[in-house]
Figure 1: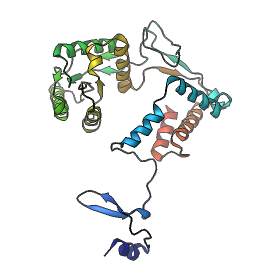
Figure 2: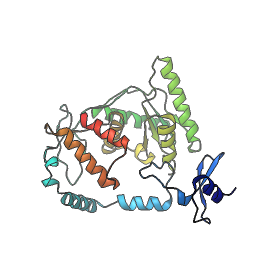
Figure 3: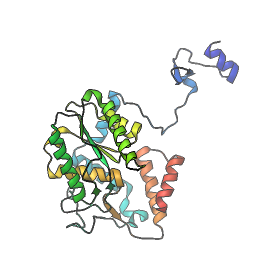
Amino acid sequence: MSVVQYFMQRYKYNLQYTSWPCLQSGSDARPVYLPMEACKIVEGQRYSKKLNDKQVTNILRATCQRPQQREQSIREMVLHNKYAEDKFAQEFGINLRYHDSGKEKTCAPSVGQWNMINKKMINGGIIDNWACVSFSRMRPEEVHRFCCDLIQMCNMTGMSVNPRPLVDNRSASPNHIENALRDVYRRTTEMLGKQGHEKQLQLLIVILPEVSGSYGKIKKVCETDLGIVSQCCLPRHAARPNKQYLENVALKINVKKSQQSSLVLMLHTPHLERTLHHLLLRWWHQWTGQRSPSTEVLSLLNHTGRR
């Protein structure tokens, strides 16, 4: 029985484009072939596979803008959405503040940027155990010095990080990335088990190879397969780190661990929950083009509004 005959017999549907190829659904072992004209792709689904060259080019073209162009696009968006006249936006009094123990408690961004000099994070993350693996040609003493400088910077900017790694720093060949990552995960898990801890490795510092192309694989193994937080660093920066670079990496680590580096202070109003929900819905529509988010997103918005 052909596909055309099957659809007529089972669904009383007469296929019109019989020369079109079918879409393969299911697994490779047990494929299911569906005619394209009978299929509809539900919007908003997550695409987990690698983008093709054209898609990557389109994303870079849309996101990589010069500072002046980005500033102009933001200004145009503000004017178009009339935030100054929006009663919900007016209920927010926004001020960027850092921890009171820092020399500077507030900051005034200049030309859309600011740095962490003399500032401390409002809620610094806590990291009790961490490890480092290097796929670069850096010498072991250089890797050790970089880790010491980075952990020291994390503690200086408001985090609480154990100064000693859970296991010794490891150097591995770029040709054995997955095996090396899984070995570090195994060794750290065994070490934590011997210490009576049920927690897993909290942070893995990864120094990338000199040759590009391995970042995606490292992230997939760490974040998806093993479920550990990773921070990748380029060897040219790790070999000669300056203060600004260490501050930026420390800020990224803190965001990954505590999800909050600076505090946005908002005016307390009886309409705060409704206002936040309204603005988040507007943001969703602006960036996705969809009027109504999915059930999962609505649940997240409602949870955010009650926090």
